[in-house]
Image (cartoon, rainbow, N blue to C red):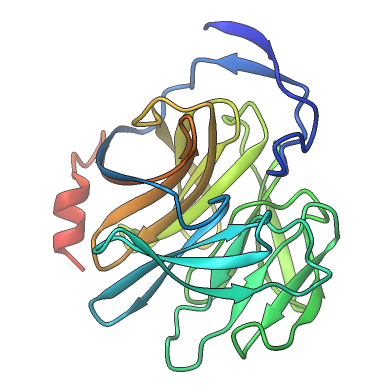
Length: 278
């Protein structure tokens, strides 16, 4: 196993919520699946100063990629068809260190949840940012990427792992021992009748995949990020396109679209075959 300790810039130097001062790079352990990830398109972010935590807003055949820009103090929508930024949603004035955003997957009654790396609450709006309320954040100020699976929200928890939660109802913590450094992006997707989860980190440039069956979290495996980057930020899964959108820094903020295959060793089912069952 390759071990390498690398210095990382002072916490928050890039206004992106990274708090690591050193990173232990390790070769990811093998999992139960062989995973591939291919970058099929990418866009330089010119419509905002940042593209941090991602989520997908989908309404019928329309897909917009949501991302936070803490430097602009808003959530921005990006259209991958036109390759341009669309509308923005202002953050609560107190949400001064926003990273993650999670859409409730209901375009007819939409709501949004954001987190904050300098605060221990989550911010919640049902009127597109005209007003906000707050909930306790199960990850405190260690949460970054978030997503919603239709029932539960998910959020990263520094380098420890992730939480599955419902605001004010309860939460469950999962340790992700295969991930060696501070988590940044997170997305969920349907996988073999269960919840598939993909996470990435600021500074060890891999995508890590898991399967949650309602009680057990199983490590499926990992794959290198599909493009060279200095920092890896947000992830979101598009049901319409069957791909993952990934934000990263490669001489500037970039959003990429990633095709991926999960070949489970025992069942030899590719992701393309799995998608055909939905």
